[in-house]
Image (cartoon, rainbow, N blue to C red; front, side):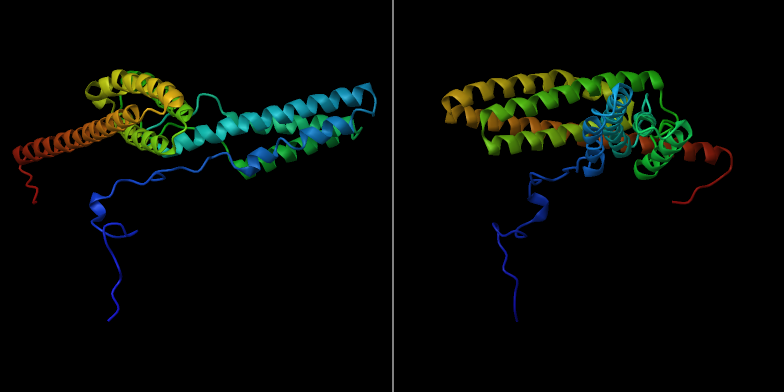
Length: 294
C-alpha cells in the first residue's frame, strides 16, 4: 500500500507543533488596493485637457485635479485606518473620517471639471453628487463608533495608545535599519520578532490592565532592540562580520522567546482573573440560594 513520504525536512514532515512560524506567517495584504491608486489617474489628463480652453477653464481644471488627487490621498489613509480598526478587537473610531472627506473632495473635483467644460452649475452639481455616491458605494464609509470599549477605562486606554504608538515606531525603525545590512535571512528573523512583538501589543490593547506588566517590554526592550539592529546593520554592511551576524541572530532569538513568554504569561493571568471572577459569582449566587451546576 502506498505510503506518503515524510521526514524532518519534508514540507509536512515532523511534529507540526515544533515548527517555527514561517516568514509569511501572519502576513497581511495591503488595504490600499489598485482601485484606490487608480483614483490618481483622472487628475492627470484633466490638467492637460483644460490647458487650452481659456484661463477660467484652465483654473477650474487645475482645481479639480488638485481636489481629486487630495481625495485619492485621503482615501489611502482612510483604508489603512479602517484596516487597523478591523484588525483590533478593541479600537476607537477614526478621529477624522478620511473616507467621507475623500468622497467629498472627489465629488467637488468632478464638479469643477464638469463646470470647466461649461456644463452649467446644475449639471456639474449632479455629476459631483453622483461621484460621491459612487465613491461611497465602492469604498464604504469610515467606522463611526468605537469597538469593544464597553467597561474599559478611557484614561488607561489613552496611556496604552501612547505606549503602543511608541512601540510601533521602534518596530518600524528596526525594519528600516535591517534593510541596510542586505541580509535576507536577518530580515526574515526581524520580521518574525516583529510579529511576536505585535502579538504582545495586541494583548495589551485588548486589556489595558496588562500595561504595567508589559510596559518595559514595549518601551525599554524595544528601544534596545532598535538600537542593536541599527548598530548591527552598520557593522555588517561594512565588514560582513560573521561573528556579529551570529551574535545578532542569538539576540533576536532571545528577544523572540522572551516576548512570546511574556504574551503567554499575560494570557494566563487573564484566564486566572476570569476563573476568580467566576468563583466569586458562584459564591454570591450560592449565598442567594441559587446553585450553579458545573
